Amino acid sequence: MKVNAAFVHYGIAIAGLKGISLLMLPIVTRFLAPDSYGMLNFLVSIGAMLSIFLGFGMAEVIFRFAVKLPNEMLDSFIASSIKFTFLVSCVFLLFAIIGADIWLALMPLPIDKSYFCLLMFNLALTTLQAIYLTRYRVLQQSKPYMCVALAQGVMQALLTYTLLLNDYGILGVLISGCVTSFIITLALVIYHRSLLLLKQQPLTRKHVRYGGFIALSALCLYGLGGAENWFIASYLGSSQLAYYFIATQFSLALSLAFEPFRLWWFPIRFKSYFENTELAASGAVTGCFIITMLALAMMIFAPYLISWLLPQSYHNSSQYIGLLCILLVIKSYAELLNLGCYLDKNAQYVPLINGICATVAILIIAFLTPSQGISGVFVGLFVGHTLRFLAFYIISQRIAPLKYHLGTVLFGFGLLLLQIGIVGNAIWLNVILLIVALLLSFKYAIKCGAIKPNKLGGKYGYS
Image (cartoon, rainbow, N blue to C red; front, top):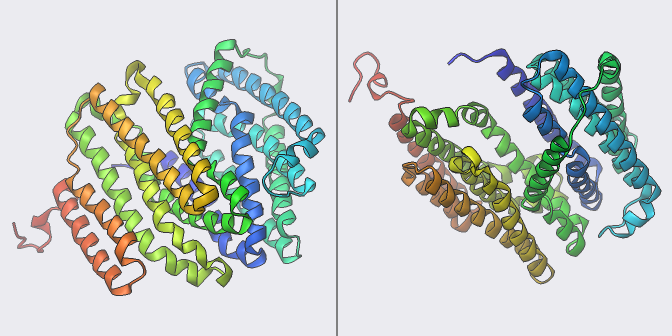
């Protein structure tokens, strides 16, 4: 398969941004104590939630309604989206700053007002910036997208490091984010200033309603991954939140490692289903197997990386990595085995399932965390993600039955449970698990045709 330039550009952009973020982890943790780092990441969690409302699904609106327009009409539509987003951002920023004292009184942790205002300013800028980046994607201009993403990542990392060296702490991290976002957004506005002079293709009620629907769906997903930070901050404190967030960064690295398969499989899975249902099933199962093996490797090696890279005060975070990896695996299973839920008009099941499962997860977390601590958080997330997987799988199979051969995947998932339940950090047992996983992967590769046995024995081969 020939890899096109766009694939490479987007891959570099994603790997650059996420990779820089992960590389900054051991640097930032050396300048910030767990309490401060937990506070910083609670602010990140606030930003993630507010960005759902602030963005209002405008990027998805552009993808959905603008892609079939001619370029001149598309730019008019995007210009209207930019002006709409700018207006919403200004109103949001005004209410956020004027009512800062009210909002801060509602927070579970004491937050400095300057931190809050910097966060709001950064959110307003990045939301506007996202519309310009969406235009690049719609017009398949992957190279400018890559350049902007890398410039932002490198600039913010360098400025953050400089400010941390000068003892600015959390304030330095927030300032670097604001300054970087301001420079990038200003550059995009100036470079594409002709967009704002175009006659507008007005946004209709249909567009706004669709954006609201997307925002609601995103909020439901936030309930299954992000909302738990509020409960950890409320009942367990910022230090515990710091340990949890460090562990989530390693699960993020796991997700990043799986991203190439996503980029390849998700655009073609519907085509595969309509042309060859057996191929559609085997592709999904292959994805399930890959994420399972990657998770096992992360569960084995991540605790050693934490001990090696991070200060002693952060080593407690390694105890959460196994559970977070298993949650990510279940989440990935749900996304890979849900094809039927997206066919025709049946996509209506997706937000319904996400909403119900998120509500269940949050209720369990709210009930158990005060008495059970972090265990209550994991119980809630496990129940929510398991229900989501079962609902997607069952409904998808009723709509579009596929013959999934999941025996090898289930065996691999058993290895994950074995690692977290029995093996732990026992070195020789982990070595045995790795050998078993490698043999299992080798066997699966032969089964899928990725490795041909008759080529393994040189020119003589074997069968």
